[in-house]
Length: 206
Image (tube, rainbow, N blue to C red):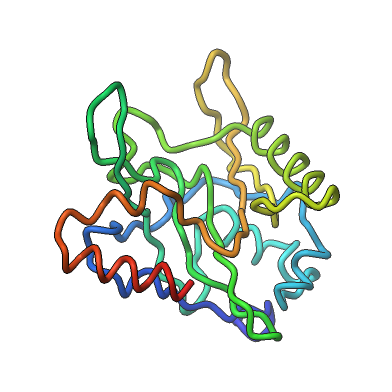
């Protein structure tokens, strides 16, 4: 599959920031990715080809086994207070593939949730279960239908693997789409004036 066939037009401006803001991190490959639900209307808005991406080629990307050309997978770092103490935080089970540039010139983050461990996972396995990922898919799209701004869901892919929670669950990866995955805690990260100015300028440009 080529980017032209699928419609991918990916870049990653976040990777231009100082490395304190992220860690380069590829998704952890899975055994047998399979797309179980796909948002065709959102794909078309993004300039993607639903027919191509609902097959094996799409499953390879949405399952984290491949990265679209131009993507720079990374886990975002941030900082904040937990249990009364300032601490380093970050995406413990998600990687940002990059930004999809639509035919209209708009930019949307493409993020895989449940794609494996990152430097910020602590004791977690970096994975997610099918039930919670389907629930997020449904609820996020319902909120959009109600006119409430939120992240959106492009697909849910099963991984062919089981994960351990309270019970054994089917592993899954959610592909999330947002104008930005920045959060308030990103502004807590830079501890020097130079880094703070760099971060502030980048945030404003978004």
